[in-house]
Image (cartoon, rainbow, N blue to C red; front, side, top):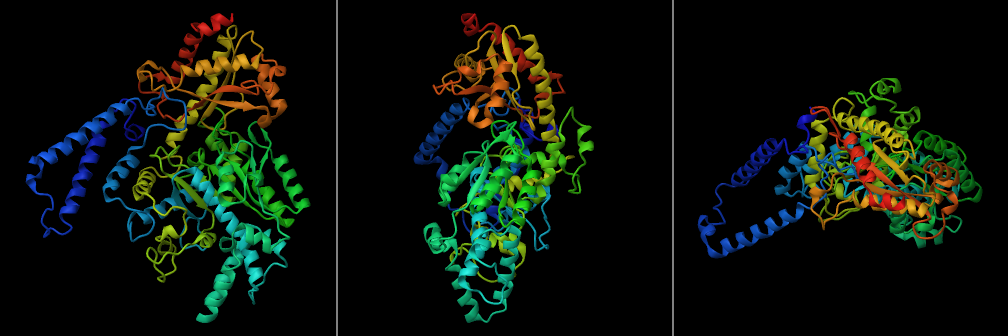
Length: 637
């Protein structure tokens, strides 16, 4: 089945893609001609012979040819020789579905602009929810909801918006003095409710409101809305509730920079982001517990704790199960907060843990398919996904889909009502209050005012062709995890064979399919020289638009290890493995961190069984040859 999934490194499936594109382009044209066949053609058949028409076509062809030529210098994401950033070849079902849908140009803000694809987007949310272990039955009151975004960054913003709305709503209820509903005793209790308790209060409010006559209904709805943080804004809300402090967000120091941007965007500010220490590039549960106890002692509300499922730079997976336990423990002590998992990179790895029926696969069953994946703590992290409050996933990463398809999924759709925005010219009032009807007006709940329906079609069709379980979609991440395991073995051999020339080590055991490699010339003990060496090597491994693409043998990326991020103990361990003196670390440029190679092993053809080729072996052979011929090393010696 894998052979039919992609266009292929060599364009092997060009005929298949061409057939699909031509077939459905013709189908689209027939649809146009049969919409109202009594309407005459607006463009005369003789137009193609007109000089201005021909001049326009000539200009268009010239510009398209120039664009096509320029794009040949693009990064070759499709090739197994590309192991740099988080990009690879595109799945044919998604690519074809997006091309098919583009001429219809649906805008998934509402069913008026996208009667088909807006429903597909809601279905995509349910598909992803099922993969995570959330309730995905729309008939259930606690069903999850997911929607697409431009990327993981916007999905993280949506998580912050929803968590803040849910946290502040009980305070608005209390301030409005709503009668006949059991409310928290004071604003501090109201602001620190657990998300599940806040949703229960929201449901009680909805049911109470539905029983009021029309004037009272309007009166109390207006009164509560006037107290909400979305109406007042940050300044007025906290000015009215001087006993409350703005809530903070707790996240590991490995968290994506979008969290800093997001806190600025919603008005809380970067100061409210508290970055926690890591252990082996994974969130330290003890540090999290200590931070929560300090917040409880200081009366500091917590908006959200973020856990990372596949860090952007190292592919490591935080102990999500421990974060969930910490949330429950803190909630019992009156400190409620949301748990959000940023799984922009590692979300689709969840397919490896799912049975065809949606159940969780046992650890021992999965381990039989790999050398040592998954470790028990990784399995425990994925097992706990069903208990978190919201998740970010990027279908345009390990989903192998075109860019513009991030995704946000919340565990309980009822909370999303707090984000609703009404516009008379777009959204209609009334109608049955069922799940699919409500979210056909998707623009009420999402940050965007316009969004691509073609992107939703691409994700939906892909998930239908390749269901999100280990036996279908999981075949892709399985190949990449096997490649990561082969990379580890080959890296160890490389380190042994090159020991007299290069000191090499994998600084952290990878939890997924992203592996880093630290290098230093043997005999060098200075970190600045080690960094200069790796940067020089990376010049041979990066895309350079000033050079022909074909002269590059492989493509990799770089990142850095900072002492402030990983701590002295871990930094000293890595530097000692490389023969670098920790004392050479200074505040000088390029001496305050360690530069390392970063490899994203997401191409499913890295281990080409058909031709008996391992591109991982080829990569290390290339490194070996290049380093032995390196004038940099010869000069250093």
